Image 1 (spheres, rainbow, N blue to C red):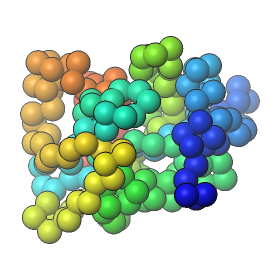
Image 2 (cartoon, rainbow, N blue to C red; image 1 turned 90 degrees about the vertical axis):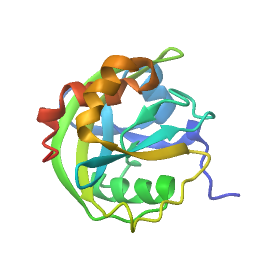
Image 3 (cartoon, rainbow, N blue to C red; image 1 turned 180 degrees about the vertical axis):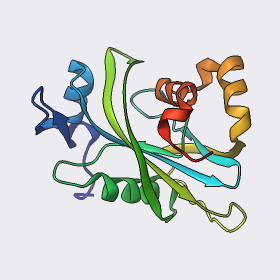
Image 4 (cartoon, rainbow, N blue to C red; image 1 turned 60 degrees about the horizontal axis):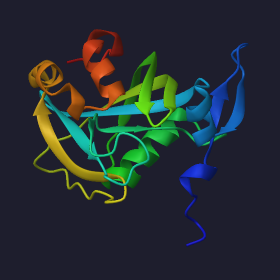
Length: 180
């Protein structure tokens, strides 16, 4: 399939010291800890958050749980478009999203890779009973709706089951302005 871009060839927006953007290959950004743009979506149904378990084949943090969707915009793609595109590609859902905040973090994600991200955080609201999730098995191995109030317990009791960035998000929940 000629339309499928290998993970190693995806070009994303990196952030230079002067704040300007420049194109960088995704794996190169993670190998060199170069700061880059990212998106993180949180889809809620009432007091529950839709979380996903990353597929076992993912190149980092396989099998770990994360928020609804985390990804990178392509070079020359808006963060808004990237967020909408990726929840469709990963979960087969369309949910209106609104940007709530920008959050920066750095985390070792294993295998010599570092995430150093300026994350544009998006929130969407859906009715879990009416949302037909159609997960892309190459990206997502499972999904579940979890009460937001249970997130801190999950972090305390099963930290190794979470992606490093999801643990950071839970620990900095107020700063993400998620309205929960």
